[in-house]
Image 1 (cartoon, helix red, strand yellow):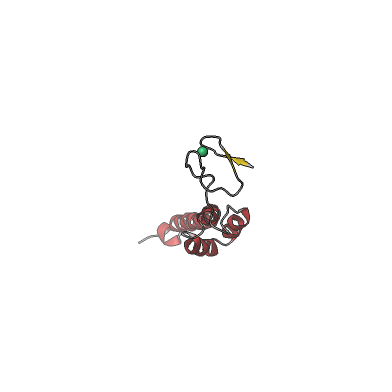
Image 2 (tube, rainbow, N blue to C red; image 1 turned 90 degrees about the vertical axis):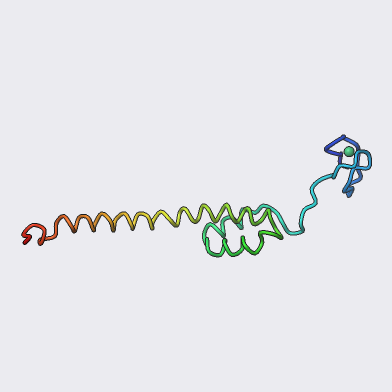
Length: 108
Ligand SMILES: [Zn+2]
């Protein structure tokens, strides 16, 4: 037994619309669509796969694709950190090279 969320009228279990006030009793979910931690983790570990799955499921399975997008964002940020660190190291070592290059010391 369930109750109308709008007026509190008692409803039969598979009622879609409340007979008293006409409001929709419970959201109609797409079959197979739900928020999923597993998919979030998969797209966290494999951001490229996550991005593809997100694009494929964006329209058909909005709840699952939003989970995937969360995992993708987290995975993308984690993936960016080593790239940024490498770039910084490159810049630092390049500057260091410019400063300590012999031609700069014994120039002309
Ligand atoms: Zn109602």
